[in-house]
Image (cartoon, rainbow, N blue to C red):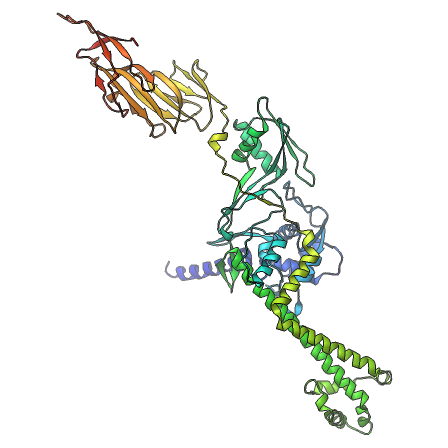
Length: 634
């Protein structure tokens, strides 16, 4: 065993690290899991502007992704249905109804203009060998968008999980501008399904949101669901409503689903039930309201890290600034190279340096003549000339020299100098350059991604308040059973699942129970009514113990343990003669048990001097002798 422990520990750590880094948790830099990155890279490599069969893209992606076609196909459909980076053609399923996509051979896709513009730049991309070493794949995409917060992501790794909720494209970019201007930001999720959202518990991505369906009342007898909450579909929502109907929690007689591209679920209400009553019940008892927790874990600096929304966006805004700067510097370098070559070409042709090679007889002599001829104009160089430049000058054809346009060449150089100066101005003002870039994206794409989920504060539904009294219970004195499944003729009442019922038996035992299908009550019930948990219940009790001594007590019931039996008479050795609701002070006529030489056979007793105490107290003894009969006079 001791020999296996190090091996198991090492293998488990390697497996856990692999699942975390290469499967489940997204990289903060491009917001992608590895399978998503590989799909996008494959689409980019295959991009010719035309649609591609999804089956072909899956096949090409398998050269980078070692986990089979099913995982790639599912990930591609999910990514395409986010609508940001993959344009769809065909049946990609429906996130609203829950219908699955068609087979991969029937559907097609390609990159969106947004993806082409913001996700790729081969000059700034680091590559690594694929799993089998035959291909290269990006370490991460040089994304210029906060992809992780745009798409949202959910993943379960070893010992950790992540759930990032999707946010609105426009609001994210506007927040980036605010960060660059050192202004405060506040961001909340936005879901494709729409709905209404309470963000009071979001806590910058460390808490939760509550999302409700958009429900409209159509008159008093119908309600229509127009939007479903995030994490639900019309099918799951209807199933939850049917379950609530079956349990008697909502009174609905018909459900008609007319959903097409938009949600339309029509609910017909029962007789005597109205929309303003049913809508809160739908929120309370069905998936018309769901709570969505969030836990943001991303890969940062090659290790998992828990972050907030603001922290992620701040880091990605700085990354955007750095990416734009790197692009400008690369572009500047390309312009400098072009300017360097055009300058050498200009000197070589305008000053007839090429004439010097006419009498040279060896390659070395030719190179020397060109070098010496060009060095006479070294002060005009953009940078030092190298052997590669000489080789390139010698490759200029006579036809090009004869048709050389001096004015065009000089104009081209002037245009390049102007472009370099413009880039230098942008590099000196990178904050303004970044803001301008973001505004350009907003101008071009904002209309495509409006906010869909309405933010609105709503109070917690009081389930007890909206619970419908739909459970009918009764008591069968012959069997001693009480409940919803009993068909007795005593203590019949209609209650809700949250109601509590106080039961008192003749022997002094009492309990407070919840409604149930069937429950046996030992002893003869003399009192069975709903119990008010907030106010409690006050009683006046007249009882006799096992020796027929009569007592009276007043008590108030409030605190209790559900379904636990309590005693009004010690050890239940006695009998309750009267249990009067409220603080009453009855006048009693007591008839004593006959006895030898007994002169006083009856007595009148009063109870108005009895103080309220606990239910377990003995109470006040009303007569010195055993009592055979008690009668309330007043």
